[in-house]
Image 1: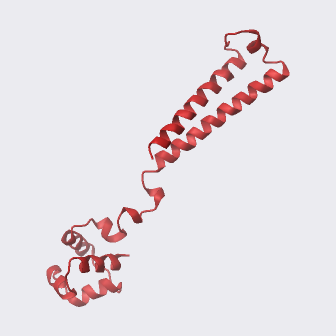
Image 2: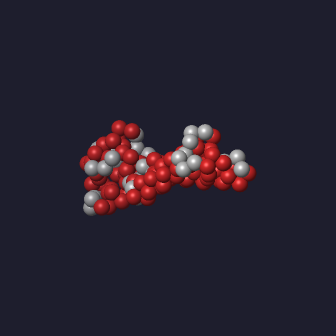
Length: 147
């Protein structure tokens, strides 16, 4: 809250309300009202206060970065990378299950009959399963390393 940060900055600088009021060209009562939350300075005065204490307007009004919710930081790309990785791994598992069902029903004979993967229906599913798995694992590893 602004009033608490303002009071903390004044006390940290070792100034009385009267001294700060003098430096900001306002009354001591104005400083007192700002500290108690009874009033808020104008935008121009806020900018002057931020400059005086050497802080940003954002810090003065909202606090430092530790007060910003976690999801507003740069975690969104990491979260997206993890979700994508999990989806890719799930797609690979699904493709392997489809291949297993095709093999059990006898419709995947082309995989068993040849040592080379052909690009018929089951061959495409096998290639996609391998690619999805590799990409998913790579994304998951990269998202873990970037913590």
